[in-house]
Length: 240
Image (cartoon, rainbow, N blue to C red; front, side, top):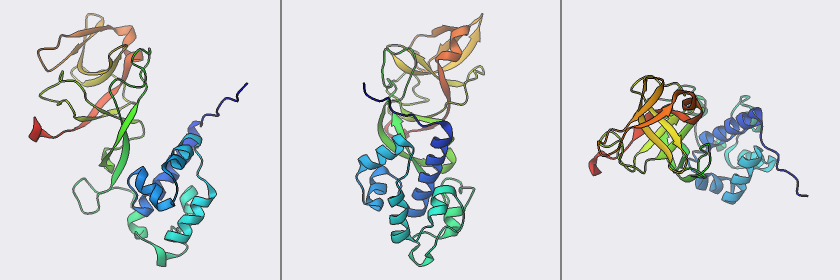
């Protein structure tokens, strides 16, 4: 009988995400392709590391040799950043800056995040799970711990949100203030974005586009079916 794959616990996932983020910041690698080039490994090796929540020791050695980076800082954030500052590609001051500069400033940073389809992994499932299809660089200030980015495939929210727009969904925010934009799962349809209103013991989900009908969900089902609140939208208005 095959062994079950061990899943990362919350602590392991947090450690891995923070360590990988330090590697990206210190090397300037913004995408998985760039990171694979820096580490001289296959992209599949990075995917394997993500799945195991484990960074191979040889990566730390490579980064010391190529960039002068201290393994203790890469692993646990313990300064100094560089054991050999002469090989530094990015100054320690920039790497250690705690508060990213506002979007558009010279010191502003970006973060590459996966983008899912609205359909998700399995359209017919009772709960929604992401299905990454591409990556997107977003301002660092747009990121949050439980951010889910999706590419809109419907015209239901036009002209406010265009088909093809990228939406940031905060999965920690599952409350439903009247009029807020929420991402709600409908089996066999996937994720839908609507303005939400509580009326007579049920939630009414309204589209902006008048060609789309209102939808209703019993109040006791709403929490389970809400993926999160939409907190930002990136779209090209020139093509609208």
